[in-house]
Image 1 (tube, rainbow, N blue to C red):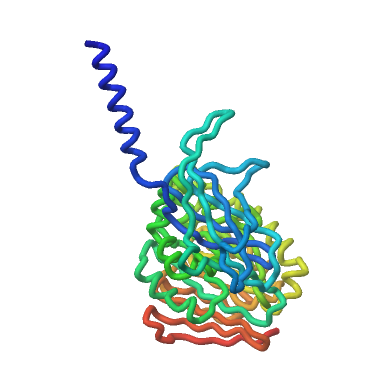
Image 2 (cartoon, rainbow, N blue to C red; image 1 turned 120 degrees about the vertical axis):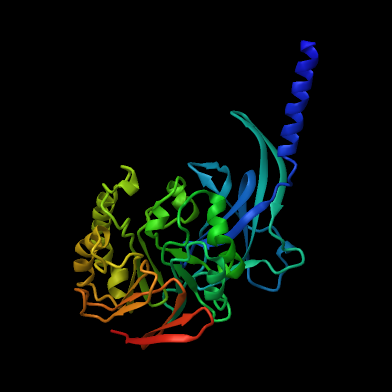
Amino acid sequence: MIRKALLLLSGLVMWFGAAAQSDDFKITGGPYLQMLGEHEVTIVWATNRDAVSWVEIAPDNDEHFYATERPKFFQTDMGRKVVGTLHRVHVTGLEKGTTYRYRIYSKEVTAQTDYYVQYGKTAASNVYDVKPFYFTTFDNDKKSVSFTVVNDIHGNNAMLAALTDNVRKDKNDFVLFNGDMVTTFASGQQIFDGFLTTAVKSFASEIPFFYARGNHETRGLFFAHYRDYFPSPTGQTYYSFQAGPVFFIVLDGGEDKPDSDIEYNGLGGFDTYRAQEAEWLKETLNSDACKNAAYRVVVIHIPPGYSAWYGPIESKRLFVPLLNEAKIDLMLCGHLHKHLYVPAGENGCNFPVLINSNVEGAYIHAGEKEMEVTVKDKDHKVLHNWKYPRK
């Protein structure tokens, strides 16, 4: 009797195990482009089960992707290929201002011990009968750059789709997400459902986005995985990059309340983080790349000083005095869920501040003579426009 029960139990375990694996191995999210530069890009995607992943790169010519072996770039860490469900492949050695085609691959890992790995099926993006994904590296000698800014989406995919549906048509070089794209970081699936899948459908497989963390991205049990999905050159949520004539400084203002507030349950440590960030900002503003750029744009989710709350006051105290000495052309903010434009010289800032609403997009073009900022609603009606001559 006991033997029959054990056999039945064993059969049930095998049945449930097979059922759990009944879904085909597949790519479930992405790919999307991160950290695009003159000579590199990071490509991120997700699968439904553990896998080893890589990217193949090809020049943008008339040759079919299958015409020859393509260079392979694997996700590695400390010399070993990474096994997981989130895949982040850093591609290097690229030429600036050059378009490349690419294909993503993931080979399922069905079992693994210290000295053995068992593989399953391979999933890959289609290049057989459709055009492969592509991207174009930045050229910092380029005289112009165009980009779109959206913020405070909070999972409103319809709004995100409307505000970014012209990104390809307008030949944007990138998109900037200025915080609070979701209300909380709960899981990887929630991040994709909240905005990433919409971004991928709209542009993100072929046009990169850069991300300024908002206060809502600091919340949720999944918050520590933010940099897994959105890597940066510094390894922090504050960083800089250059695109054409513009040098961008992306700052993280942290939370808007004191670290001791009950809402953070004793886990707030933003005072220390902002202080470290201010030291980094001093060095960045003193760099040749920043000083020699035609334009300097600062991106931060919470507007420094535009609230009587603690976080914005601290950001103003730490960051604004440094920025006032750096010939900043424009600061881009969100957080307030309403449009507000503050001219240079007001609120202690020597530069203009655009606080973008959650239902409008800022569409920016920086050229040889001026930088133009146009704010439009979801129906692409022009609401505001400013021009800033090159200094």
